[in-house]
Image (cartoon, rainbow, N blue to C red; front, top):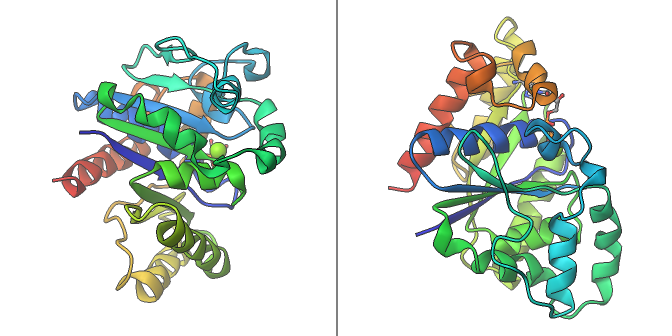
Length: 261
Ligand code: ADP
Ligand code: MG
């Protein structure tokens, strides 16, 4: 059975891409077959996985979605890249930004990604979708394709308003387009353990949402080591295996595996 997890928050810089890459590779290290899908025009997942110039890629999620929209056939495995750390991924680039508006006139525009991923589910145990920092049509596509949503929240300020909007959108997709969708949990990221501030924020989030939404036990600590991985093109497990961030993502991987039992 394949689980599709969308990693979403319409705020940028909260650790969506870092979480997608390191949870994905974490799951692969536990023996799972994993596909990562970049649904963000920034191409930062591609960069994190070692593609220096995503805008120069010939085949990305954009071409794949265009083919589906035009009812063209896809080659098996088309656009899927194998990464040396044991995962497969589909990158995106700046062209995805244009897709957001062109989808408006497409029939079944919310379900293009679901249609595509349903054909890949037999090959993977986990498909993680790295969402863009917006609640536009591409993110709706990700939520429609997903079984659950993992919400990274930066423990740096009280993100209540943005979170309410995101939760409302997830609820709307659940009611109208994808009754199977659930929220897997809120993951606190970039937690600065030297200050009380992060602890206050996490306590406030637990108080505000803890009775309705699962909040992962493990937080991801703030560390320059995590920031460095983006430029390195490899996971935190190779870049700083003994560090606090690698440990945080290892524990998160365990929690996600536990969640599915
Ligand atoms: P998003 O995908 O939500 O925009 P990213 O994962 O790209 O967020 O992270 C935003 C920035 O923060 C990146 O430069 C990344 O390297 C850095 N970053 C991510 N996680 C951490 C962390 N735990 N500690 C320090 N920096 C981090
Ligand atoms: Mg990102």
